[in-house]
Amino acid sequence: MEVRLEGPFGRVVDLVGVGKNNIVYIVEVKSSRGDLKRDDKSKTDHKRAVAQLTVLQDAASLTATVLNDARQHAVETAVSGTDWRENPAYISARRDHEDIKERLAARERTLMHFSTKFHDPSFLACADLHYIMAPEGLISRSELPPFWGLLNESSETVVSAVQKQIRKNTTHVLRAIAKANTRDLMKACDIRIANATPD
Image 1 (cartoon, rainbow, N blue to C red):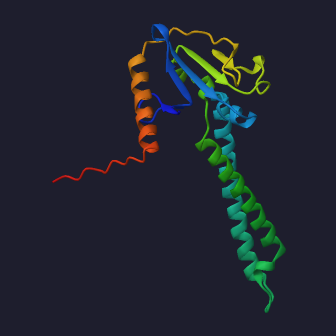
Image 2 (image 1 turned 90 degrees about the vertical axis):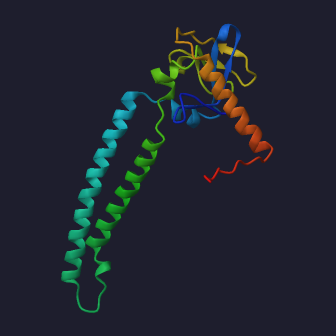
């Protein structure tokens, strides 16, 4: 059950619970290395990714100019009865521009889903204890982000999480759990709520 915390645009967590003495737990479930690495980015990684995006944007602008010049040259120098699009310089410029555009689109997609969840102070302030649940051997103790503990696939504690001193937000967490439970129950029972129309 995924639960959205920190308001309507907040983080989505895989599992959240409230235990004895109002201790709030968050568990992120990871099934592969790729899934694990997606959330294990720092602010430095984000800055580096943005810088790479800027470089690719500049390169795309440059290759677009070169392509335009190559097109104009190919048209002007085309021999009668030949297709200017077969000009080797134009073909090469088009290939370079398309390659850069693909790399730029890939970088933009990466940034759109860029996650610093494991290192985000505001996310770490959402719960007393944070755990990653993963199959045995997927993540080593040395790879664990600071303040995170590790559970195996049987929910056994491999590494205990460090309990943080946070502002108590148990009511907020319970509200988020209730919303998620209601949403999932309504989906399971195929209940739809129609938008009310004003009289």
